[in-house]
Amino acid sequence: MNICVCIKQVPDTNEIKIDPVKHTLIRTGVPSIVNPFDTYAQEVGVRLKEKLGGRLVVITMGPPQAKEAIRSCLSVGADAGYLISGRKFGGSDTLATSYILSEAIKAVEEKEGVKFDLILCGKQAIDGDTAQVGPEIAEHLGIPQVTYALDIQEVDGDLQVKRECDAGYDIISVKLPAVVTVVKLPYEPRYPTYRTRKEARTKEIPVLAEADLTTIDLDRCGLGGSPTKVKSTYTPVREKTGMTIRGMGAEAAAAKLVELVHDAKIL
Image 1 (cartoon, rainbow, N blue to C red):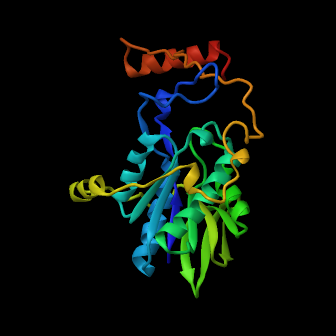
Image 2: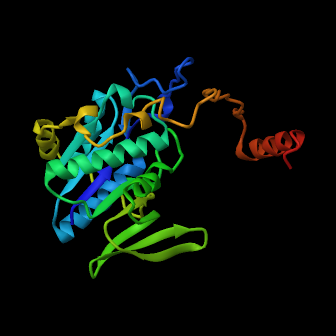
């Protein structure tokens, strides 16, 4: 089974900064991580590859520093990684981003000489929380999709997906090729070893720019190709309003706590 995992490098959530003019995230000099939900998608992909054989390729769109996110995935089981990066891609909203990624998937298939049976994404990115890119990729490619996957198994050439829902979970069968988005799983993604980290540092990560995506319509990319416009953004102010009770025994502290809660009309 040949698998493509779409990942995103996101700012550490404790270090988010926003450009007051462009209303976009400032990434330069900000610590970055692989989007946590994408690490679960990667783990599902690696487990399927180990069981069924095939190739697992990671792609991401972003600035040059996003190569570090790809190297993280190479160190835990990915066979190859591609960075999609171009000035005309900057400022893309979810619709434009998903369109660019769908065109990139086609270009990577051609370069790798494979057709992807399965495209995996995390259910959402923690910097945007839209949960739109994965389903939109499926629409651009014209293939089935299943969202909020807790587990994926191959059964008689089709996928059987355990899908999270309000009442528990559904079991959904879907024909390949397909797009599946993954939630936090009951098991944790694997950790890299010193050897796999060292190997990942030596692997080449090709960069695909606008000219490499030969069928792309650049009018559908970037700020100009994004129907969503950000009017304003702000970083929530975190205020510390807690109180610490000190210098009392347990019974006196409990009585003081009850008094404070009562005075605050919480109870």
